[in-house]
Amino acid sequence: MQQLGLNMNNCVGIGCDGCSVNMSDMRGAVTEIKKIAINSTLCGCSNHALNLAISKCNKVQSVRNAVGTVKEISRFFTSSAKRNSILKKVLGHQMRGYCETRWVERHESIFEFTEDLTKIAEALKIVSKWNDSSTASKANCLLCSISTCEFIITMHCLSDITDATCVLSKYLQSETIDLCSARDKVMHTIKVLQNKRQNPDQFFSLIFNTAEKTMESMGIEVRIPRIVGQQVNRPNYPSTSSDSRECTIQHWKKSAYITILDNIIADMTDRFSSDSLECYMLNLTVPTNLDKIVDMKSSFEPICMKYCSLVSLNKNTMLLKLMNEVCSLKNIPNYNEFKTITKAMKCFEALNENSYPLLRALVQILLTLPISIGK
Image 1: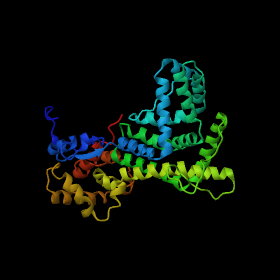
Image 2: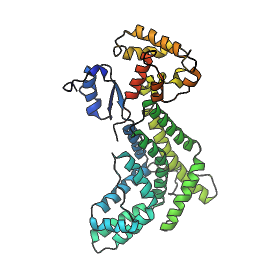
Image 3: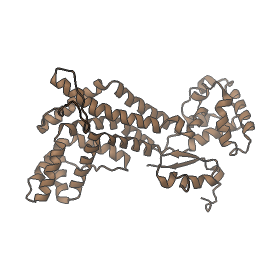
Image 4: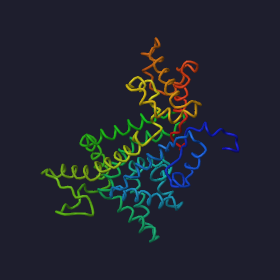
């Protein structure tokens, strides 16, 4: 960057994932860059954080087993042109592979696998009858793995939950978003998941009905594992219902659906909390937030301390000028219309550079901060 003649004082954001090469306090890439880019703020890749939050679902035993089976089946078919041709003929299209790092593809592979489960089972049955004993044995083992009540219900639960996060993953890879809109989208996704958690009966009944039809078409009995007094190696949720079907629904709702939701909500709330992201303090400059400020001094002081050197002012001078600009802005004739603006770009375009230079500069920084390093 120095060889290109870039002024490192103008570097306001560093976008990266959370690997140790980047984040190490001693010799990490971010630490080294911040030594010369003193005005920069670390902005972790939101898509990478989302991917890690989804990965936390693997703490749930049924999810870990199901995802491992999906990967194994994907490798089984893609590693052989002959096997792949059988699957493609049965499915009518190429099966999408499960990739840990291609975020959108990871979501879509779960959807497709769940939708095509009966056809994938059919392809495995065909391969299990081949004369090649090694291939046939492997196909039969994989067929047995997906022909269980636990696997099918877990896949349908995952498909429902990743349906909400897939929209966010695609949005975070678009090129025209700013930090405010990204945060709002993240918070909206968390609320959607929380709504599912607060009303599990409403959502899981639909999931179970769909999974039940899949099991019926595959000739699989809908049942629950044996419940004992003490069990530490798998979920062991007793049910008080006398109806066997209701008992089955309650067991899988608790052991799969609710457990997965709890894991992903807790992790996303932690990773995307405003307290853990220093860059979110610039959201105060967006009109809808600006209008709600009660104590301007305490609200703007951290911002002025961070960016005073960028505008070549000392902290107190910048704070005073910024407060004056806000007071002036609140007295313009069309302020009632201005304060309804929710997008940083629209705010930037509405602010006059000569009348509100500091506010405009801060909104420009907000627009510049990186959100995701994935495309």
